[in-house]
Image (cartoon, rainbow, N blue to C red):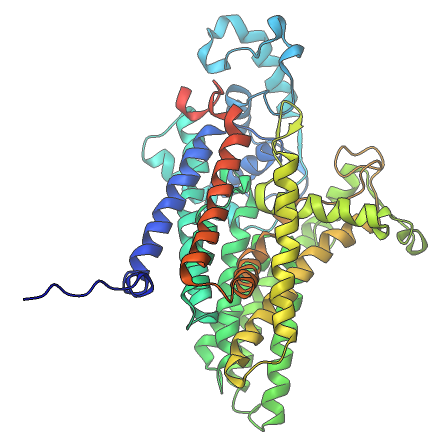
Length: 505
């Protein structure tokens, strides 16, 4: 009796595809858990402010104006906040950071704690008008942690560990999107969730609402692709698309350009339906989509207008930060319209899109060489994908091409939006952005487009290696993941030894 012939690697991968993706979900959870536990509270990306909003929502309180911080949040901020983000050791006696407050006798630091408490009680939460979806979820999770008996620093990290579940869900969602766009191609189907599992984005190690954007719009993207492919979209699918778009809107206002692209996609589908005489048949689906998308959005806009005075809720924040709108004629003097300025903007935006924007000892927690590599990859590889889309294709590629063009438009809109914000404001004496560096280079503002970006990225990588076998393609993917992980560990290594992190509680 002869032994069965060994299966080729591709057949083995396809046979175990779901198991591989489940493993990637678990690896993403472990990845986010370890780094979330390693970073102390509270980072420089307004983590105190987002934490305060989560606590307020846990109390059933939705701010109606810019208001001071919650009495429940302030003790956590004072007792568990680390100076390592915005201070340097030389600022302290002996050129060393002091021990964490929770590790010192109360009588020794009583006066210092009282002073800091008073200062934080008087601080203003200028993000009070942020959309509510993340904070409602985080507030419920906070209450759940209390019900489980967590307190102090462990309760704080319980809140941050919500991201562990979100990261695992994002990997599975990325797989669902890649399977929809590349049903016949194993390489990008596995590549998208693999990159998501090891993405070195520090947003996932923080309490902040940006973490929900890739999930909310990723779901909207998948459903909208299905809806646009349907010969006559159904009512349930239309309602699901509308609710997903509403969720993206209620997760983060920076998702607005993605919603504009989505609205354009809906209009194009309506045009196609009208052209073939099926618009009336699709009217119930269109109605359910419009109602489910627009009603939650309209309610939130009305809330903002009534309580904050404008439909976006940003006027109070802009006034607090002392920004002013530039006259239209001055927009064109912005340095972003020069080659050097454009590179400064793109390199900063794309590098932080991959890695985040946390400071450590007042310096960016990043390596310049790594930043350059991420920037070049983010420009070159998607460009290869776009070049392939512009080339002649067989009719069988039509659905894939349509989804990738949608992805491309989402990515472009996500890049243009922070560029537009950079141009229209005078930032005066603000720390970031500033008059010296008038650029919104916060890659987290693009995270809603993360899944569309990776679909485009993997399409470009697959195209660049089209003459190579599976071994070369998956080796290239493995090398990229190894680079992501090793560079992240090397860059973030100082954080692991912080006495303020979870491992030292």
